[in-house]
Image 1 (cartoon, rainbow over the protein chains, first blue to last red):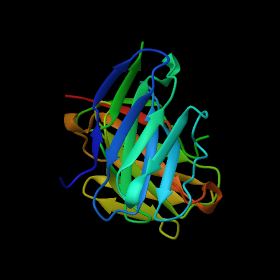
Image 2 (cartoon, rainbow over the protein chains, first blue to last red):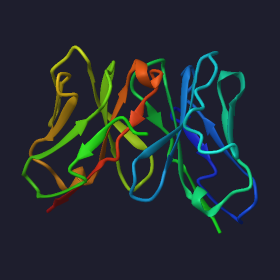
Image 3 (tube, one colour):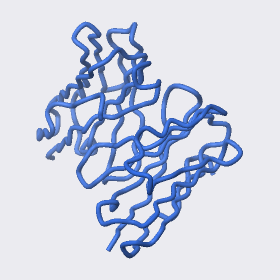
Length: 112
Length: 112
């Protein structure tokens, strides 16, 4: 796969459950971002990984949200004890250092 | 908080007309980028303009950057129905930890 891959593409869960969203970036890309987009809105920055540096977690909305990036490649965004306001499309993107971002198709999360 | 803000929020034009949208930002930037998003999924990179550049062209796209006014514009000439999408500007700068942050977007409808 040449592009950024995200899974699942759609996830429906019940309030209070934990969810994990996965992102496979383009091989060799050192930067990886997670954004959240509510319907008809802009992209809300969540977290940014750059190489071996400590991630920029300044956009995570609460301590229920966490993300990790293993081996500088695959990343997992975890949302614990989901709430209805967590419903959104979660977008992952990767790039070579600074420059053009390549986006995945997103994971649409619906919390009932 | 978002660094860039697009104006207008929505734009409706006839096929063949030009579409212009603007982006304003708050702090000094390294680069400014424009992206397009169809149907609320992944974004596609259109063009990147560096802080020391004033104008850039790519096909039917023309981007300008005025760092003194902290603003950029995206012009789509001879629009087509296929240009119907949301358009976002994104900036990176030292104040934001060099991560890419997005504005709220302009929704463009090109009527055939």
